[in-house]
Length: 213
Image (cartoon, rainbow, N blue to C red; front, side, top):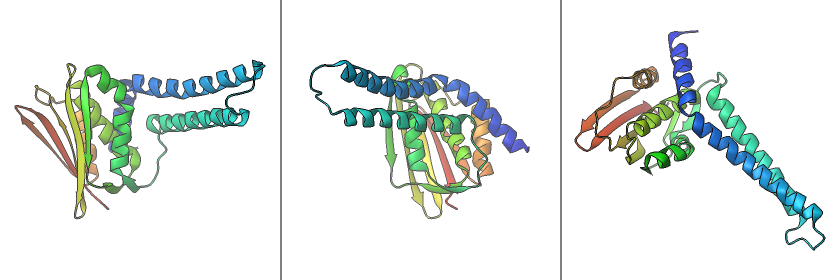
C-alpha cells in the first residue's frame, strides 16, 4: 500500500466519524419508509372495510421502500469501505449535489444556506472514491467553519480540457491548517489538479481545477 492509499484511508476514517450523524439519518429515513409500508399493510389486513388503497399498491410501496433502503445501504458501504476500482468518467455535478443533500441536516443545524450553481455535468476521468473524499472534505470543512450560520455556494464549469469547481463560504476566520485540508490538497495534486485558497473580508473561496481526462 502506497502513501496515497494510506492518506485516503486516514481521510476516509476521519470523514466517516465526522459524518456519523448524516449516515444515521440516511439509515433512519430508509427504515421509516419500510415501517410505514408495513404499518399500512397491517392495518389493511385487520380492516373489515373496503380498502381506500388497493392491496397491490401497498405491497409495491413496501417493495419500493425496501429497494430504496438497500440502495442507501449500498451508498453507505461505498462511502465507508469503497472497493478499489479503476478510474472512470465521474459527473462531479451529480456527486457534489448528492453530497450537499447528504449533509442537509448538518447545514440546517448550523443555519447554513447552500446554493448550487453548475454550468454543466463537470465530467472527470478519475477514481470516484478519491473524488468523493475531496468533495466531502471540502464540504465538511466549510460547514464546520460556520458554526453560527452563513452561506455556502458550490459551483463549477468545464473550460476546455479542465473542470473548475469552487466552494465559497462566508466564514469570518481564515482557513486553518489541518489534516483534512492538507489531505484534500494532496489528493487534488495526485489527480494532476490545482487547488487555490483565497481569503477575503467576506469569506473564504477554495478553487479546484482537474483535467477532464
